[in-house]
Amino acid sequence: MTSATPRAPEAWSDADLGRLQALLDALPAPLEPLDVSMLDGYLCGVLLQPEIVPLERWLPPLLDSEGRPTPARVQDELVALLRRRHKELNIAISGRQWFDPWIFELEDGAEPSETVLPWVAGFAHALDAHPALLRLPEEPLLEPLAAIYLHLDPDDLEDADALLEEIESLEPPADLEEAVEGLVSAVLMLADVSRPLKPQTGAARAGPGRSRPRQSGRR
Image (cartoon, rainbow, N blue to C red):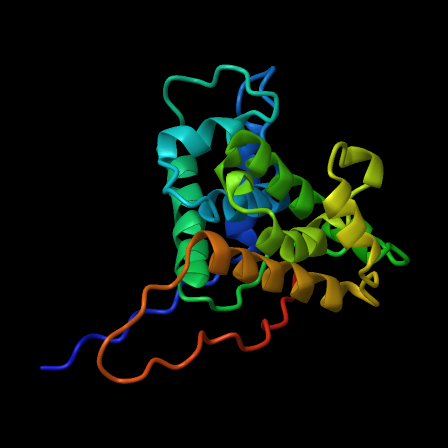
């Protein structure tokens, strides 16, 4: 008897992403939900926590960036779409597989850091709302966090001298592709710290599959 081959995640179409954004935009005022790029970075930050963050804890900061009370009931379709992306990212991060972050090209001439900033802001929002990752030993976190936070204004990183020093040692990405690869690589490095792979017995285990990320038509 052979085990079934895992099905590849269904690709998100532009219509899927548009529907997700429309459902977020339809949330009642004064809620300020994350947009689709920010929520993608946010979900990565959630999934890097050393303990599982349940839906009832990760959903409210996504539905309102200011932490205001959210509706007692959220549309099933919206929750289903968010859970779908959460599951996809969890599979990728758990297996140390490259994934395609939701980062969208801006107008011609935009700097790489400007383009990835919404995703990075969502990631930072996750660590503010769920700070357990930052309570782990600092040294192994510095390099991957610096690779993400180098896209932020240094003034936004108060009381983070060691992180700022690490950021200053890095070269800015030459282009958007390099910036995106840096984000994905940093997420997987953080997962090695907060969600270490369990040793496997029996046949020798090959290293995590970290092929280069596929090109996205959205970037």
